[in-house]
Length: 90
Image (cartoon, rainbow, N blue to C red):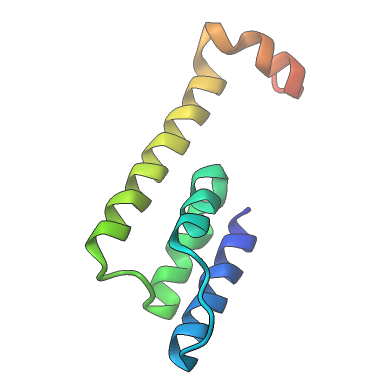
C-alpha cells in the first residue's frame, strides 16, 4: 500500500502543477489509513506535497495513529488471537 500511496501523491502533485484533475483528498486519506501512510509520508517530503495544509495534515496523522493502533491491537491483544490465527500470524 505504501508504494500505491507514494504513486498517488506523485500523480496528485503532478496534476496540481499542471492544473489538471486531482486525486480527492478523501481518497489519499483512505489509502493512508489502510496502510499506505509510510509511502505517503515519504512522498509528502520528496514532492513537498500537502505538507503545509494543516487540515490535511491533521487527518493524515490521525490516520497514522489509527493504523498503528490497529496493528498493535492485532499483534498484541488477546482479543485478536483468532484474527492472528486466521492471518497466519499466531
